[in-house]
Image (tube, rainbow over all chains, first blue to last red; front, top):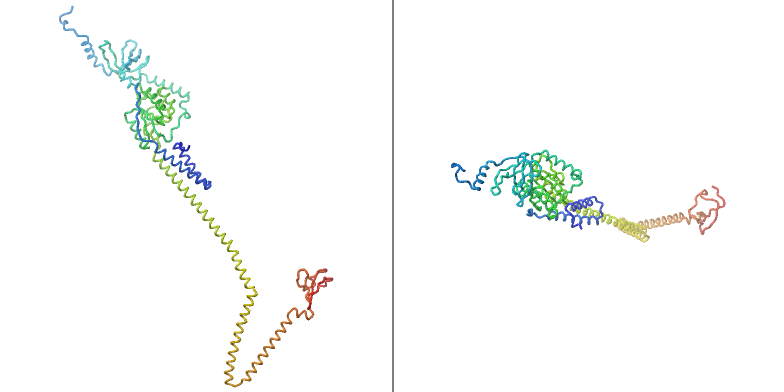
Length: 64
Length: 449
């Protein structure tokens, strides 16, 4: 599910998770889980950044 | 009859036709203004029509090649300014005006039509910001709809790859000017949506005059942009007015650089912001663990301190009790006394020995053995007497001896407290009375303080 996140969605989730971790309201267990989630969102972001492949393709108008 | 001077060799038709063409050659790059009628498209893509001004009429032709370059295609009943040359077609014997450019004669009328289009689109809500599609934050591939040649496409590509080195680009070459432009642009927009190769479309052109921008003010292009599911960004260059395409597009830019920046985030910025978050994550994990570590350490300290007190306090008490007990112990006291006694005995012995020796030597000197012996005997007798008197005093002081002399001790029967004053007692109080020998129990009948 989370693997289908766009860069922007993953970044939002990462930020939200970080904020929760920084708020100090999490139990240790939840904080560990949040850290794992954050790592996953981080990886998705990096993956999305590298997914585009530099290429230029020209699609001419089909001739009638 | 032909006259002799006229009896030269006749032209062939072809020769005359060529002669006519030669004569017509100066009539080139002409501008002619007239109204169009009989517009027809031939099989080869040429357009045939007539240009007239109410008195005269000229056949005109717009070849297929030129028709793709002209600003607009002529329409029946409209007045245009045509540029071209006059030519004679030997095959058909017809004189034609060969059009290579068509200009609007009445820009005012054209603008009025454009305003009417804008009003209609406005009424439909086509310019409503709420209708506009959101640009993707990070596209994977960008479709560029522009002329395949020229600076615009280079600038776009450069800006995009400068900002995002691995961004995918798909180019849909379109005519951005001329009569074929609206159709070409509309078709490319539809193909973009059908093929789905890109996430966002950039429609670009390097600016131009009102006439040159004509295609971007047509309803055909406006409708194609409105129908697009993919967001469309316009970058039509610096123009005097915003085109209809700008108004219905989802984001409006002017230059290719601006469009590139609008469509593609800077990869370096994204990486920086990711790195910053990575640092925050690491710091947070580190902080949390060190915080938990501190908490554990402080808990451990508390446990150790508590344990020490828990164990130490009774141990101390035990040790103190043991010491107290030892001090109180009769065995200990006897020991101590024994020790003291022995010490005194030793000292006495030593003193006596010393004295005897001294006496002996003095005796040896004076010869008064009997005196010494007597003196010793006297001293012994004295000591025995002192001892006896002390013993008697001791006996006399003991309560028992006092009681033997007729005194008695009265105590409260309950508390066992000794009664020293009648005031301490009350009638009916139970008392015990200790005598020199035995004891009595009684009850107070009268108190006289």
